[in-house]
Image 1: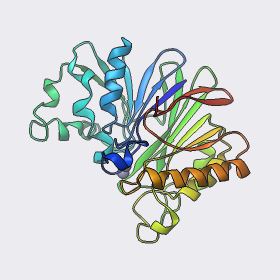
Image 2: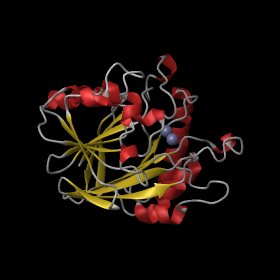
Image 3: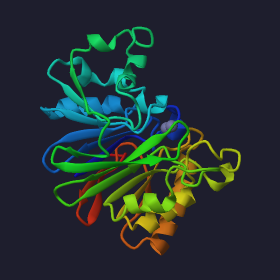
Length: 294
Ligand SMILES: [Zn+2]
Ligand SMILES: [Zn+2]
């Protein structure tokens, strides 16, 4: 499986000179499975470049779309995803847990002729909606499953186990230790992510952001490092960066993560996500084959 990071930022895009190395686009991850199946996770502003790469690759066949939840930072790139304006493009859209079928067209909230000039029904591409009846699916030839996360309004995480033995887990937006009742415990999430080749996890906050932002639906860096250790993942990617975190602040987080990984993680690194990072995942490996500078 190949995984490319197109957007790393939470909440709102952060272009500008102070974020140029890690990137300012909101979250989007593109995946190519061992059998050539293409999918993407979330549709923040990073999806614009994913769409361009997809078209340039000459990929034919449907593209699978897994969405964590509908907060704007996760859907705002959709009108700028060029393939949806092509009649030969098909997108298979997986459900957000618990939503009714009719409500599962909320892309209409963007494609309503008001928020963008284009209406959903006028899009020439084909869209197929997977019914919200199963907790697990087959995506191409790969089993995919989901887990509810702790986030205001709800969110869901995903696991994809590819035919080549590699596995990807995507957990955003997610507060590992929320105040009050929780949907899923850290132990359940660690079990869900157990042994993954790559775990991509929401690590928006630092401990000093709490308690002011407790209950806002995001985890701290130390909590996510602990999750990576508990789940015994091969590699861990800290993701969904706070818009106030510039490159220098993310460098400091990378130093902490490297220190933790060398002492506590037996299998691989903990990295701060940057736009352009590309990983090649194997059954027991996760190699960074390209980074944001290339
Ligand atoms: Zn978000
Ligand atoms: Zn959110």
